[in-house]
Image (cartoon, rainbow, N blue to C red; front, side, top):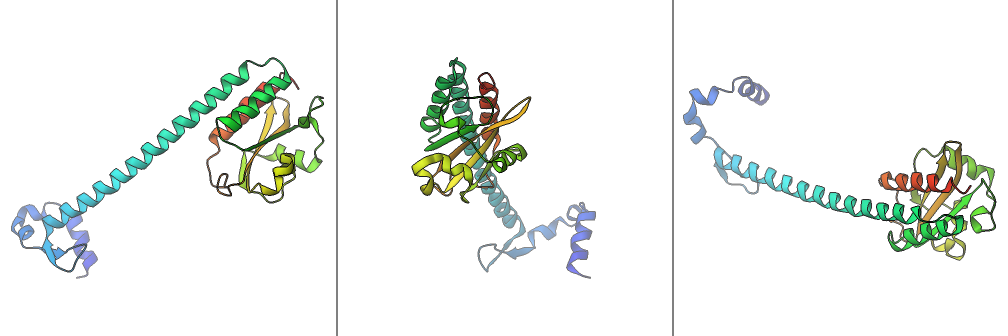
Length: 213
């Protein structure tokens, strides 16, 4: 008989130890953290304690994630409120940039629009390749700076930017711009990070800018 046969038999006959309950007090197994043998009941207690510690650690991690998400949600809410007040393009852009820099601690923010007309940097021309890139983005892009065209929008700070996030701006008529944020920290924006709140910001900004472009 193989060990697997014994294990399968005990799984299929859960009442085995009811008929042979004395065996429980006679079975000794290795201690998980040492070489000495301990009763089976003690080993079960140790196993339960380890599972309890693992669950407590996981719960603590989930609570931390929840608190971080709540904080991000509050920031997005404040940004949304700040963007409701402006009734002209320039005040809207100022409120957007200020909110991202001050509340989200994003050091570099820039945007380009290819619909409408204006004198600001937001209306400087971009390549057809970048327009196509923005149109094909199904969700915000996050990752290392790989000499993207949009990084040049950050001006003199561009050579120092190590990670970026690009958010396409859309309305019912399609993609009409892209919002870019960057950081000198190479870990600030990375490919595996969640983009839920970035997408919400992009949707909110796209809807707001539709009034002006």
